[in-house]
Amino acid sequence: MICGENMTETARQKAIIKVLRTEYAGVRSALKFADVYQLLVAVMLSAQTNDNQVNKATEKLFSLFGTPEAMAGLQPEELEQYIKTCGLYKNKAKNIVAASKMLLKEFGGEVPKTRGELMRLPGVGRKTANVVLSVGFGLPALAVDTHVLRVANRLGFSIATTPDEVEKDLCRIIPEKWWKDAHHWLIWHGRRVCKAQRPACEECILNSMCPKKKVSDK
Ligand code: SF4
Image (cartoon, rainbow, N blue to C red; front, side, top):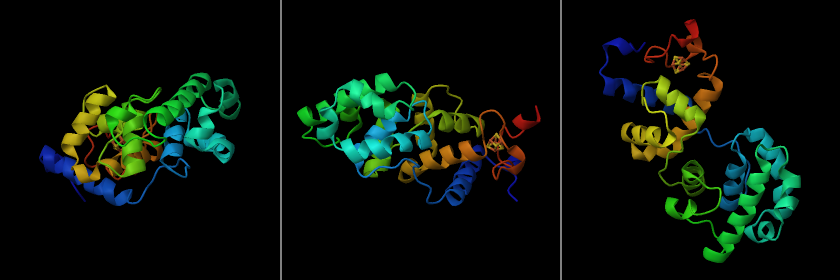
């Protein structure tokens, strides 16, 4: 058994990363998509909406309007009918149609491969851009959502409270070759074990190394 109390901070962080890599080897995004454009739309829809709800909405949507050309031809009000089960759907509909038009006008209908270009698309922030870069293109990027932020804080990887700052801290601690996978490790751990309200510390494989392991006892 690993004992966190006798470890240096760097050794503790390395040991945690090793356990996460092993435990969550091969985990992938739960979103369903056929190409990078559909991934972009699915991630845009996923804000404040769980992956199952997004997948239900996109099943029909992508079968009819799964390309930038088809999506750009819709009025936002038409798109709303397909994504009503997703939170903030009116705003998302506007942004998805506008982003699809911009892809056609400025990027030849292709999803760009740089964060700066992605973040020019309406409704695309740093987290969405990082998911597209890592999941869609396999590039080193580490997207920080609410699960990643919470787990990173609890594990002592970061004391920052904003996604951008937590991303910087994680990218310092985790080797670049694992950035694209670390997003999934931390999300899965956050959803299954280190939950927001009731973290299952007693069952957690990291509890001997976690500074917040007692939160469930409070
Ligand atoms: S020990 Fe508890 S707080 Fe720490 S990572 Fe595991 S579930 Fe989260």
